[in-house]
Length: 443
Image (cartoon, rainbow, N blue to C red; front, side, top):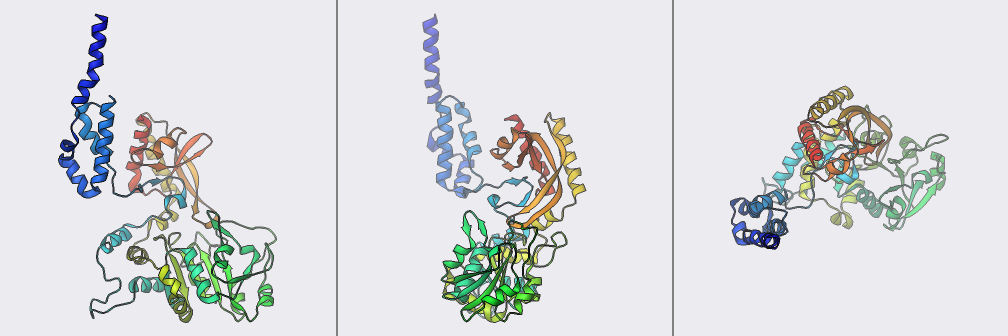
């Protein structure tokens, strides 16, 4: 009896394996046929093979192979996954910095096909690339006589140095020789352009007189860099742009974070309009930080200098594509982007959202509590600035489960608890966030 029962048990897996649907049958499932059109046949076949393998090992009933293959399909043909940013860092570099507005996303979709990016539809002749985006950028900064866009903030500065200072000197304060992230250092970027750096002043104090004493026949321009990812406090001094503008050489100001005009919550963050009014010849910045747009580098300033820079051969290698131009223009002309909304969020409203979410989750048996939190700007902008916020407090184990769930949520761990800060989470995503927490608790 015992031997016979063992034989029956040994035959069961083989019988089950014979009931696993064939690949060609599965690929004929209407859901998978549609997925092949959207995602490509490779992604669909990979999901089918994975589901079949689960059935072969006995972890999946054969009759569920098709449904499992559908569930295993990626949402898109690309490898990037959308996440909910609950870190409390508005511009999180690892999460792609600024999320695009709905208007910008729609503009990108419109521009994804053939467009008039370099064609005047009225005359049928070639037109300036991205002309409407450049007009929108210059329109947001009245003191800029001209504008140009490249593929990121570092590229903007490299292009300026190459076009204006190759074989010549750039004057820069020792206190502004910064590392911009991921091991890349500003001096190395500038030197690779063929320019020579001449350091002036000291780490903590540099005056206009220090620059004046260093100006010579080889001086191409004075470079003023905003130390956007650190603070130096105490016995410090930095020359103002207006002081440098009086020295008789061009002044290039790298403001970094992409703020185009003064912001009441960020009084110490330099903006393009103020710097140009103070006498800067050129301003460079990033588009995917406080501006809230796509990754790109912005150049704003005097017409002759912008033209000289934009016509340099390197500008062709650093130019942006039509999707970036579309997203940038929609960011500039459309409704407030998510970054601006998150920056202006009302702390009391955030507390009410956190309380509602925590109450609903506790009703489902989740150890959730609403707590006060502190958010930051991030992305190399507004160092030292803190923003009052509110968060969901969950057991620490939720941090990993949320990151790896069907709807990835990235929070932070403090004092043994997983905090989901709501300042960068749109209110429309509250239900998705709650659903992700419930799913993580069930896993």
